[in-house]
View (tube, each protein chain N blue to C red):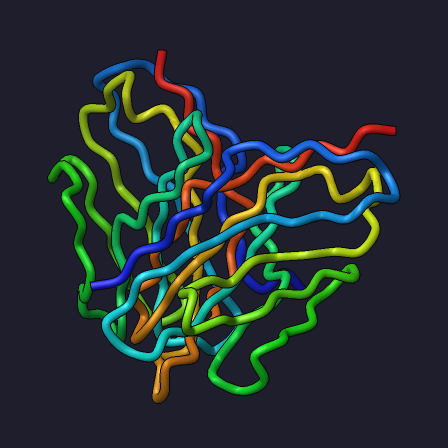
Length: 111
Length: 115
């Protein structure tokens, strides 16, 4: 069985400041982990993925995430937020076509 | 070319009606999925099809039935629509995982409103 918990339902940052979206996972075997982004009234877009290669994963739009097995975490970060980053972010754990989505974190970026 | 497409984009209908949502992918993937996203943005997997076989079926009412005429299509039929069926439905596809990697590609979603 596997599951994922996004620790914050809503994160608000100012433009130009760092972003941290937290995710913890549970999996009985070596997981694949993903972050997806959903802009308002849009579909889901893959930001980045971890598949047991490098633990620090770089994605699109300046986002990156670090896989920490000891902490069962896969937090998403970005050094400097842009207004266009405002969206809903989903952490996902998946294996053998069984994908489990977190409840989502809504990121608000203030000017 | 659109990788995963869904039709219609919006669907407004009366309670009790029967409706279908279509999904097509041109990625050559052999697994397709349907997800339901509720008003709180929570995504729940409903079905997946791999080579025309249902391999995941969560606790979804039997009013919902997936139909896959071929590997590139997975349609969702809903009978006797209820108010609680109002949501955004997403189709997705992926390649069958030979390892643990199984990135899914999502369609744009179909917003269903039941009146």
